[in-house]
Image (cartoon, rainbow, N blue to C red):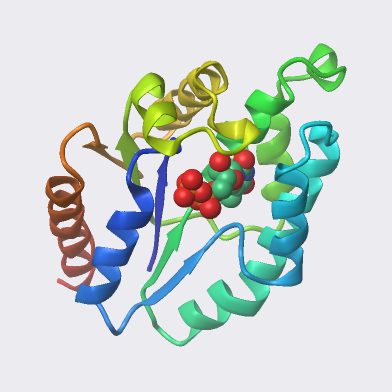
Length: 201
Ligand code: TYD
């Protein structure tokens, strides 16, 4: 079973992921961007305010392809539960927002385009926990250390997440992330228990 954690920057996702990790030593915990050299190149690009958004999409997507073949697919094949801090929806939400003003957007819908380049090779999540936070709070909490964390940009990212949820409501579990990190972590732990135990029974 593949469970992903998604949400805006400042939604407390990493805190949640760490508390889940403590309670589930048998699961494989992973994240995107990864810590491979593909992930390093993504991080480098994110720090560059002038990076081309299309080039950046392909760097993130290359990192995902490597993540799938090296970590996610082998773990699933071994019957492990995989929990990933960010996954495909981050690309659909963030890079679609980054491409909204690019020439590509004159030709097609960036979100659908990004989904279409993933479709032939990706492994969709079985369930996705969406940590819901408003963009102002998210930007404030995140401290806006990279170009993706600014409130106006996060507003567009949030709209894209809402589109994804609307298109696939069964897969998403929405959790209010405006509460304290420990309350959010507790709710997510419960939801994850339900997902995993629900699949077993
Ligand atoms: P992450 O390491 O999860 O940071 P945080 O802990 O702040 O959530 O992600 C780093 C940034 O990368 C984050 O601003 C979102 C962005 N990102 C994308 O734009 N596209 C992607 O596909 C992924 C995986 C992340």
